[in-house]
Amino acid sequence: MIGQQRRLLPAILAVATLVIAMAALALIIADFENPTFPALGFNGTANLVLGVTYPIVGWLIASRRPENAIGWIFLAVGLSQAIAGFTAAYAWHGLVAIPGSLPLADLASWVQVWAWVPGYMLLLVLLLVFPDGRLPSTRWRPVLWMAEVALFLMLVPTAIATLPYRGPVLMTPEGPDPTQGLLPLATTLSGIGSILVLLVALSAIAALVVRYRRARGAERQQVKWFAFAGIVEIPLVIATAWFAIPAPFDMLAAIVIIPLVPVATAIAILRYRLYEIDRLVSRTIAYAAVTGGLIGVYLVVNLGLTTAFSSITSGDSVAVAASTLVVAALFTPLRRRVQRVVDRWFDRARYDAERTTAAFSERLRNEVDLPSLVAELDTTVRGAISPSRVDVWLRSARP
Image (cartoon, rainbow, N blue to C red; front, side):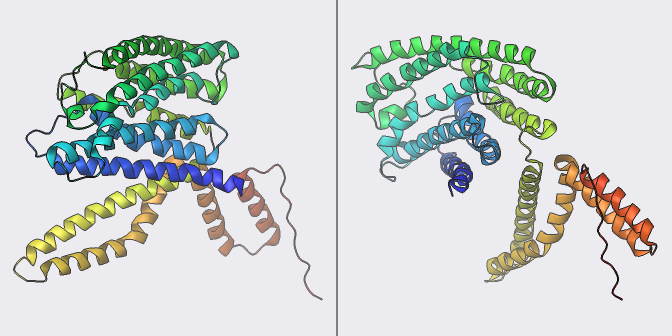
């Protein structure tokens, strides 16, 4: 029972994070045409990208290896950034776009100020503990303690100092007067935390180098993929806290660079079979591809039929019904074809085994000699699953 709960929790967290991220995107789309809507920039786009990519990879890992901290860190990063993006969009809609339209919008304006900090810090911790979820050695514990101090300095003082100002003022570019209340102290402590973040980042990169030099075999390749992505992504994330990237390159950088770590982690898992989840990943990719394709078909058919029947009162109903029938008819054949293509890349062992079994079934139809059948069966089983031993039991014929 406990094992089932540990496997169910990653799925719940991943789905919740994706729902929050999609809700944030829906609010952004609803307010996008508002002339006062602020540009998403690097941070706003990064929150959405992190909220979508990290929970998926985190679920894949944590559902198969719940004892490894990597999957849970991915889930926590995605949840933190999704909440930051959602609360920012929620507060802007409820306080600026349509004041009073959403409950607790003032509280959301306060949460969005600091909700991104845990995910930001966990990105650095990820560099320290990849790929086994543990530090390279006990000598690296001070770096972890430094990360905890930096997290406290960047989160707690800012949260306390901005709590009295929750409301529309936190949604303006200028924000509250930085010389009032506890804001000067919070700014100072946050600056110290930022310096510690830089030290943690440098230490984390050094830890990756040390781990790479010590690693052998598959682990060395895993660290190589992850190190490449981390060394590109993490410095960019840190740099954006000090320097602004000009538009539209800020959004482009977030879309291209931010997914590097989850993509590299997925490659390490798939290419070097770190967590033995080829079949699970194959199914996930196949169903995602089929869903995307069917959504496209539905929209095209619906748009075409709506245009064709625009003069008929029930045109919309006919278009919806016909589009649904087309999607239902295409689902099974499309899923089979997509699954075969995906299996070739992400579940090769199963794909090869199925081909071997199909070839054996074809030969079996024309073979009547018993010794030849036994030899064929032995060859097929060894080629498909590579057992250490194969025994064939034949039932004696009845007298």
